Image (cartoon, rainbow, N blue to C red; front, top):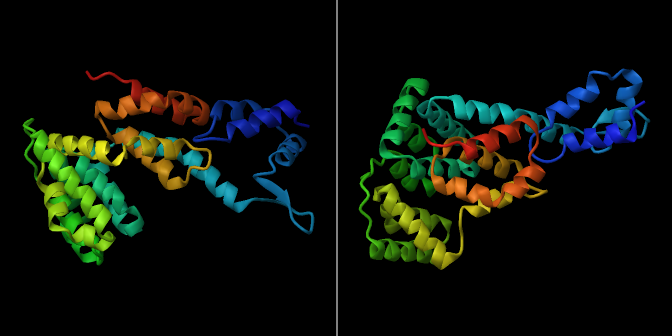
Amino acid sequence: MASPSEVEVFNHALSGIGVDENSLVSILVKSHDEHKKSIRKGCSQLFFEDERQFERWNQTAIKSLKAEFKRFKDVVLLSLMHPWERDARLLNKALKKGPQQYNIIVEIACTRSSDQLLGARKAYHSLFDQSIEEHLASHVKGSERKLLVALVSAYRYEGSKVKEDTAKSEAKALLNAIKDGDKKKVMENDEVVRILTTRSKPHLKEVYQQYKKISGKTIIEVFDAALRDNANEDAKKALTRLVATQEDEEIKEVAAKFQDKIEERVKGAYKDVLVGVLAKEET
C-alpha cells in the first residue's frame, strides 16, 4: 500500500506545467497491484468510482495529463528542428486549426527576420507542395485574410534606422484602430495593414514600445497567463513556442521576472529545457 507521503509526491509530480518524471519513476518502479490501487485512490482528480463502484479514470483530467507529458517532446522538437521547417509546420498547423490559431501566424510573421520568414516560405513549398500565401488565401475567408496574406508575404527592411516620432504616431494609429473599430474593421484597416506588413523589425519593436506606453499591454501577459494555476492549453503552448523559437533578449528579460513562478509551477524535464534555453548565452 502506498504511504501518504508517496501519494503526496505522486500528486505533486503531476501538478503544474510538465511532469516530474524522476519522482514518478522512483515510485512506480517498486509498485505492485495493491500499491498502484492505493495510489489511484489517492489521486482523486485522475481516478474515481462510478455509481456501480467501477474504478475509472477522469477522461478530462487524463487528457490534460497527456498534454503535460507531451510538452517536453514539443519543446525539444521545436528547439531541435531547422527553424524554417519549424515555422512552416507551425504555420500549416495554425491554418488547419482555424481562426482561434491565427495569432500564431501573426506571431511568426512579425517576429522573424525577412530572411527567416523567406526561409519558412521556402520550407512550406517543399513540405506542402504549395505556397503559404496560396494556402492561406484559399482557406481564410474572414476579415483576417487581407492582413495575414500581407504579413506572410512581407520582406522587410532589416536596417537599424528607426524614427521615434514615426513609431509613436503609428502606435497611436494602431491603438485608435483597435479602440474605434470592431475586429473586422481593424483587420481590414489599410493603415494597420501598412504598418504591420511594411515596417522593419527594429521599427516594429519601437512601435511596440510606444504602444506599451500608451496602452499598458506587454508580452509579460503571455508569461503570466501561461503560469497561472488555471492556465489553459493555448497559453501553455504559447509559452513553449515563445521560449523555443524566440532569440530576443527581451524574451529572456521577461522570463527572468517570472523565475519564481517557473520554479514553482514547472516540473521535470520540461522545466530543465525551459530554464536551460532561457539561460543560454549567445555563442
